[in-house]
Length: 423
Ligand code: CAA
Image (tube, rainbow, N blue to C red; front, side, top):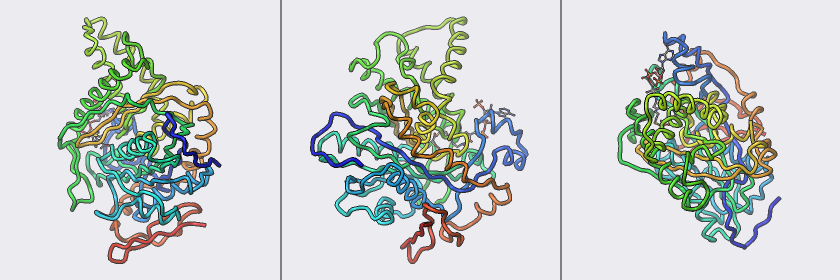
């Protein structure tokens, strides 16, 4: 168990990680059949396989508290080290009271800390992580660490275009000055923001309004813009060479994944825009060669980070961090000491491209997240059960005992929400 040190470290990043997912899932082919859609549209067209289905008891706070308590328990974190708890979410449970304060109380964390939520659609979790990283890097943390939980339930509604891209889950990360999982490259982050209506959810709505195809264009423009800035800073800092494809120097790139195919679109676009930025003009033969190179580079650099997204679906703020978890779960030993790129996108929009180095003990650290066990404990449901759950009121949780080590929303008295945990 690590103790607090007052020395300001130049290193900052992710020390450990844990996840929580709803206990039910739907096979995406079952949904396609029920909707009269060729299954290949959802499986190969969108890249989906399974989709998490959250019932009202598995709200954002319950998922966040489950992930954070696993983080403390499995990574043996001394709660006295924690000086900040942040929940990044776009599906919070109260317009005023922070999900982070529920988590602090449910986990019995110390009172001498900052608790707050961060919101900017799917970028909200990254906003919280960067705020925590800057707090640590500035020295204000005085050796303490932050827990940032990215938690969301992606709900578009039955029979909508977004229906096969639903999901839900939470990733809790420990941000500290001993970033044994991924040490961030400080001072090179690339950012891109613009005021667009690609996806939004007015205060009175349970489901978002979304301009689906336009949202893909907004994502791609943001990815190119944020990457361009990162590349400039990374070249200036000597992290990547000024000549050639800097994106290829990154061992892997984890993208925000609203549906798996989006990561492929993003990667192909990022390479295209990098070539354009470098003034490379491609003739017909070179365009064909780049198509082949981009497909191979996607398989090597991006596909290994998509395994959890394919089985859980969109998790909004948590999506990029499920991607990092997937990547390390499969390949941490091979990636030790390697630099990876990360892209976070939140509709509206705000985005960030950043990089970091995988730590030498990352394989042992990610093993503590027990990702296979978490997924194996889920149960498959049919479409009728999924539709029954979708019709339940958010405020009326079904009476169901929480599984061991998990939290459930149990009810509300004038908005004072109560939760139970399974022994
Ligand atoms: N076999 C194989 N593929 C097929 C097929 C078939 N029979 N039929 C269609 N396809 C392919 C299509 O060619 C298409 O692939 P390409 O884009 O590569 O051409 C893919 O399946 C999807 O088909 P459509 O575009 O026709 O699908 P759609 O219009 O019904 O809906 C969507 C797609 C717009 C993504 C919709 O699911 C949606 O609105 N999703 C929510 C919004 C979203 O996720 N936006 C992403 C960017 S915003 C963001 O990232 C923030 C966030 O988390 C929300």
